[in-house]
Image 1 (cartoon, helix red, strand yellow):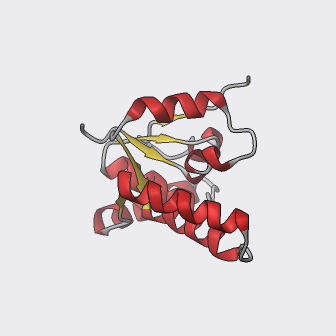
Image 2: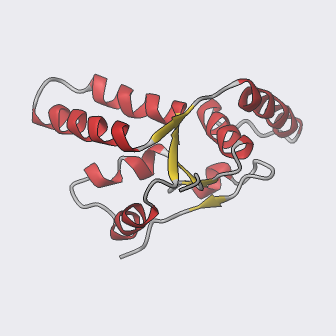
Length: 140
């Protein structure tokens, strides 16, 4: 199955929440192998785990990330993404906007790979030109 989606950190971590969003869980179950994660989001997940003290919560996250790593592609922030990000960052800066660097990296990875970026924070990515963004979070 061809890649179609780039999942943001908040989508990937949703299944680990005490009460996960049912809309996100349903979509994750439906997408099969058509989703990827960007290296910056993978870093955020790994960093979040590394900050936790040893214990049940950290071990549960380690197991979740180990399983996730076996089934999802991690796309790099490569030369093409960096060039796209630089152009877009300069354009946004001229408009007086300075989005977080990691958001720019994820937008760039989505743009150069022609993927839909899936996030809870749609507004954070709305200024990036040509990036398709979706939220799978339902209000139930």
